[in-house]
Image 1 (tube, rainbow, N blue to C red):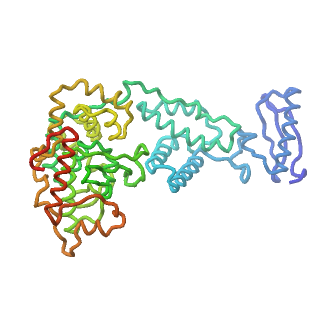
Image 2 (cartoon, rainbow, N blue to C red; image 1 turned 90 degrees about the horizontal axis):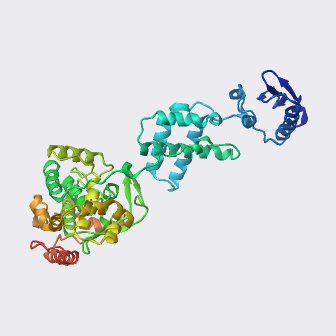
Length: 466
């Protein structure tokens, strides 16, 4: 673009302003800036105008950056078009979707970004120009919200990420969201663990079995005695099991119906099952076989609804948990408390804190800071009761028809496709280490002996029935 496209210069304007006069893309503009029209300021303005003309010649001029307060800025299109906050949010969310497609971002994280931006920040200033947002405006909006410290920090963090994305196009300009500070979380602000005592847990487990049946009962009982995160448990598949050695592999999660190829912490782990957890797992596998033979189960997920449908989220389990706990008139505790209970019980049973931390995917610091204080307040009798409950025979006394017997052996389906045949034919389960006692009693004895060895190794009393 040649010199014919710009003319004029600078001049003093009323109300302490300096006016520029130039032509850009065939249109004459006369924006002004708030600066006293002294001789020195007019000289600097002429130098600035010369820079503007050079930028116009090379196609690098941005009207919004040079004159962000120009009252007709919205009417200017093409190169000088400015973005609204809503448009920046849309670009940021599109970038998050691209990261999600590359498996560089968790689906739950992308959903949280969209929910907070669309629910909180977009209604407040989504139509305003992005570069006109000030720190005081952002702080005032956040301060008006009746948020807890954790919610406040999450909303502020997501806004900072979106603004940082938008200001990457303008690294020379100040990002107002960067000055927002998160609320300081003190020790008293962090949620305290409130695990079940073993007696209340046994009562609750029996009630879950009674109210909702074997599938739901096995699900809740298993997490009490393994401490698995709910997202990890509903993602557990048959190929993750090694019943012979009493070990399960935890290497994935299912969050809000979306499968992730890693756990919450991003680290895989192997969980050694206590005899009680192994008994629950055997009963659940027997149920899987019966429903598979009936044509109700066509998947390899270990835990599922009574209809055979796998768990896609945690809503149904949470509602059932609340109803049963309320009917027992026990103090309500969220379902995640089952994990807290498992960790605390292992410490009370005398397990090494480092081993407990590794089993549950915690740091040793968390073990000592969060759980050790609670364990110190419990008596020795509580530890003895926990050890008794971790034996498989305790399950027979607290639930009905949950032990493994001849009645639980997998029947052959009408098309002779039993669970064993399904496992052998499925390439995804080629490395499955589960031997189900379907045809011979000798295999059952192998599992029984391994249970006894595992119980003796863990310091429990082996049950006569297993």
